[in-house]
Length: 499
Ligand SMILES: [Cu+2]
Image (cartoon, rainbow, N blue to C red; front, side, top):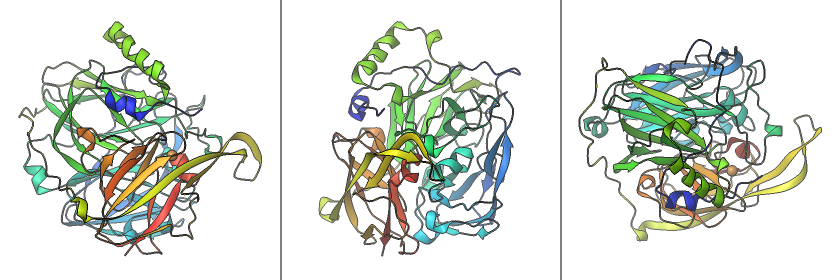
């Protein structure tokens, strides 16, 4: 199936909606799990941060352990804190028996330290990128970007957050106590077998990518977290391989989005619901001063597969009491003993300087295509009968030996992107960009900040303005690609050099 749900319907709707989320769980023998908070590693003084890419063993719920991958831990990696105008020195060690490339998603750094597939770390080898952080405050992340294996390695655990601070952002009155009122929230979905082991197969993934049936937050199923009776910042990453989520609270409370992929918005935007595509980050502030618990709902957008279903869901919401809602993926529970941040939200957050029309020097178009190619083959060349799709951008699949575009450094460009079928999150390395149009429409206020992912569809063009300030050589180029990881691994990706 391919979903026909249009972004246009979602964006034009300010109403809240509801639907089924993950399968309700009855596994919790020992009560709900506490939200795992990845350790915070301070990279601000330039001290090298060791990240061992290793295999692990992790229990997502009360159904036993499963083999996993992680950075210096069993599943996921530590949260790395850095700041504007500092050097971030990373020291990856690959202890696995397969090669791994690790990309710094959202970082404005040269191609030679960007971590694309050309920079794979061989088994037993090290990689020590030194990153000059010049960009402003943002929530970025690092994850596997290994040629043909990004989906599987990320699914098994190779992902972590990078928080960039800057003086301007630090001067704002926003919650900033990591693990107390400033929480990392990585949303993913996973499928488990009867023994509780992770199930994944690129070759058996459907044409929309690999969907897990169970939502996990920081590696736990339906956890809770204690928060102060005040404002709480959630740095939410949609770290799923393929799912688009609709995020809201069970009591439909208003929250404020303060930052998108590339950093702070110009002003907080009040919302009751938001869409998150794979790879996107949203920083939101939720006010817990009333002392009531808040359940974070993460609904599968693909289940709203047509307009009738979508409108039906809206009508259902009016009939439902709070008790009928799907289970919360994360429960925020107030602890009055924790120090609360109760200052009003700043009215102004950042200044976003947009290019003048005359500064935009050239245009490029990118057409993402999926075509049924008949019978699929597994990794050993055996026919397996599952959906086979040829994935391409501008008619060609990713080829490690081909530079698809050559871009001039420091010059604004307009890129237009659309697909022949369905919605795709388009990600560009080495930059943040601004969205001019999304599916033919002007972006809503919460998408008018710096971004590195734009959603496109088959009904109209999405359009961005972008400028690259760092070089990427033909040996170590940047990538543009669909962030549905199974689409990326099947070839919906291209390489470009900046000089
Ligand atoms: Cu795609």
